Image (cartoon, rainbow, N blue to C red; front, side, top):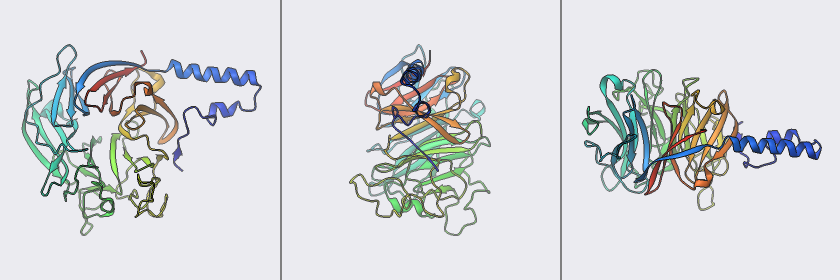
Length: 388
């Protein structure tokens, strides 16, 4: 069964339950110890950059060359310690910058040292004002000022979105396959249609070709790019550094944000299986329950949606207190969620940085062992977070 989150200060926390039958002085001592441990682990935040226009994604260039940052309006910029934020990097494709659309993810090729290839996902306009997610790559010039020969190699078809649910997260696995997370464009039934690319995770080679072992390669009328389906609006995508498998998180509607470990050919349920309801308070029309035979239940879910976003595993030695954790931004709750892991299971949860009141859009583990966050505002920020 998936782990259901309890309020942070709930008396159902395992440490408090353990002492529930103890003498009051012992209970008080245990509670004070527990509280002091939480306070001791409160992170230190350094603001590295402000005045970013709704930043969406970041990626680290090697050898301390800086951090690439996308702004949803269509700019790709370079931040480097000791330097002013760069002017927009040239060569970025035109984007559909409406509502949730725009320039989305930035990722480096696994072979960046050899090819200097930068991948971008973005909302691309089609006909009749509709848009879909597209992915392409270009070569970053030696002076880091332009993308050369940008080539779009993937397009979400058909284009159905008027501004919502693009997904757009990217992740490379250890074998060099590229996973692309795609929202259902707010057209719920399409997530179940194998002839459409809405509500899917797709798997391609680094050059955009379909691997021969993709699960639907030989399925009539199915798109061969598809890895898994039945997704609503993916917001986080990352490879577990210990197991090497893909993890994904996605927005539910009103309630039902979830984490999945997508497996080849599996159906993750949306909109037939969901823990959420419509924002109006009514039932999702297509929903038949929270758990449906033949559909994969989420590995983890929230009954009340935090509005989850970017996701990063912590496998650095810099802050041992954070080992075996995954960090997730929360747009609605305006905090940083830390989930501690026991293998592929969530053991506990903690909320951090809630006092800042900022929508955390992206979360990345830096090469120095610090977390780097982007806040989603018209005066967005790049934050560096650690325990020292």
